[in-house]
Length: 196
Image (cartoon, rainbow, N blue to C red; front, side, top):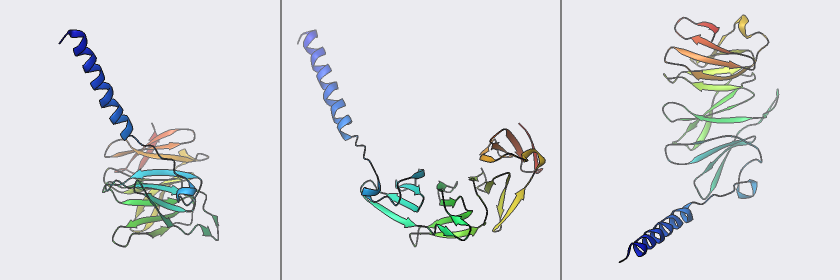
């Protein structure tokens, strides 16, 4: 066999291989017509079983690659309607949901439902699980920790007039508190907030 034929066969084999791989890739559009509970989505996560969880204004949807299962949440409160829901995983891969109205849910896998674990009755912007799986919450110009079912708020003059946007791990002892204006470092052992 000549060099030319060997190269041609090699090239054809690569093309065939790539066409099979590309054909296996399937991207689907998901919407209300497919079963999503709302037209606006806020966050998505993939759990340890491969399910895709999608948060919408009206609840949580689970997508298994073919079907969508809805998990409605109570979105009507005396203090207003829920505008946002967010879903996230803790360090043990448990599913959690929080609403901007301060309600926190945890997924009960045995009963296939989300159970309300805490209703803080306050605006909630972010929930974060630190390296030790402690729950940290960000609400307008305060942040804090959920301890024994209660929100222990950490207020500081540094945060006056600022809004909490995110909470991140810097290392095992420190959190980064991201606001609309600055980034701060919080020492968890000493309970001290300082400029970063």
